[in-house]
Length: 392
Image (cartoon, rainbow, N blue to C red; front, side, top):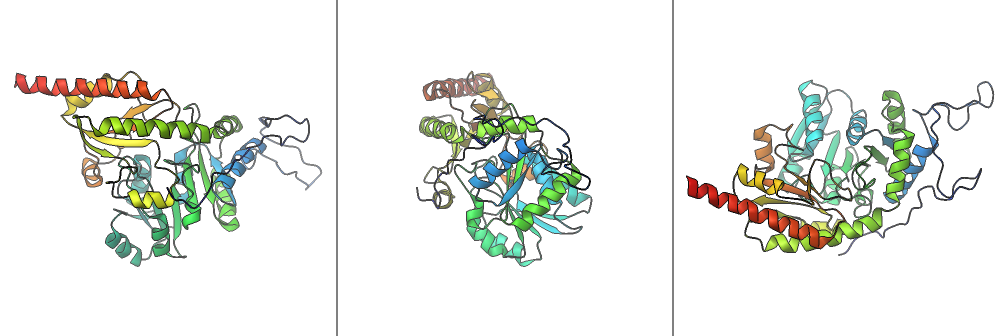
């Protein structure tokens, strides 16, 4: 694949302790810090405003995303909430019609309360996005690949169409900076749920907002302190530890997903696979241009009805039925009743999220074990479908 960046090795605080020389950085749990003198604060005064442990993670992620600075937040949704503070009452936002359910819920609620105006559109449709951006717009929200259908949009194209007067924000959670760097393609802000690939161990929730310019970085830092959504030092310590293994974890994720795709392509239970790495995927060429690889998330439509879905997920041993993604363990999710349950049925249908859609977050276990597990569960689901047909 062709891409515009090389993976950068970020040491994330290693060998930065000047006081005692500890190889890994210390955990600063102090809620406040002493002043040197009257009206003479030190670098840190109160942990909501700034914390050394949190700053190490922020600096590392900024380097990886080619950002000038950023804020580490308490959750991924608090990162989304933080970005919304940059808007004025009545500002217009363009967002994907198939964006993450939590983002959809927040934007929809703000729209209903009359705080902002939101248009959810299919951003893969060039005509629709061009028409939408001809109207006065304050913020363009981009997710690529999308959740859960893995739609890919051209970040550079959308940012160019939006122009300099629109704030361009990309949720990069699904790929992480190991595989995609939206600022390189014109984004002003990059958002992460660090709960996912960046931490990678499903034991911390967190988020991040990373800025292209110093001015934007200062704005989000001011707002993060104002509304109090910065992350705890201990959570940042764990996330920094996870970040150090991002590249090696991602390599195994990618190896496994490629093996699984080959298995699913030939299985009679699969109606359709959604994965940008497939050559017949609508966004394949765009993904090749702006991503280093195609990621470790995939979705597919299973033949059969709800009982077939039920039989499939209950037949799995190595895939855990759970929300979230990007951890070392493999997960299976039913978007219609889980991650996107906050969307109305009409909105889900409009986004293409059908009741037979399954999403997989492929972990780093043995690929052979994962393939055998899927194969067995898929076969059981189809046996259940046949049984139902004979009992009618």
